Image (cartoon, rainbow, N blue to C red; front, top):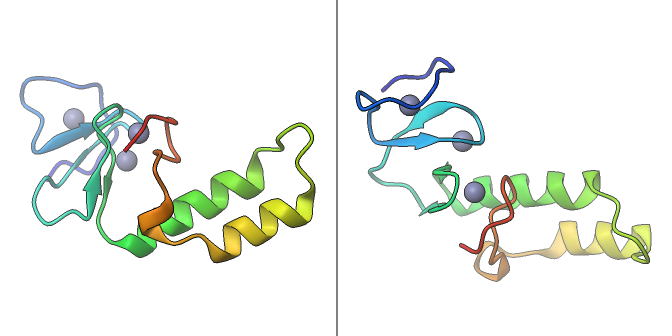
Length: 89
Ligand SMILES: [Zn+2]
Ligand SMILES: [Zn+2]
Ligand SMILES: [Zn+2]
């Protein structure tokens, strides 16, 4: 597996992740984003990426406590978009 950052080429192993510019392992991932190619290896990985996104991006009209609560309680099965590129999972 190619873990250094690079541009996508035909030689890419597995899935090339356009969010991080690395190759993701395509086997055994919990979910793989079809848009950017990021592989979430476990439900926990998806949740922590989601939590970071929810807390980092201020949404107009959404109170901070709601975002905090949302980040703290979201389950991987309820997350229906890719935190890295926003595409539907
Ligand atoms: Zn690649
Ligand atoms: Zn994505
Ligand atoms: Zn990635």
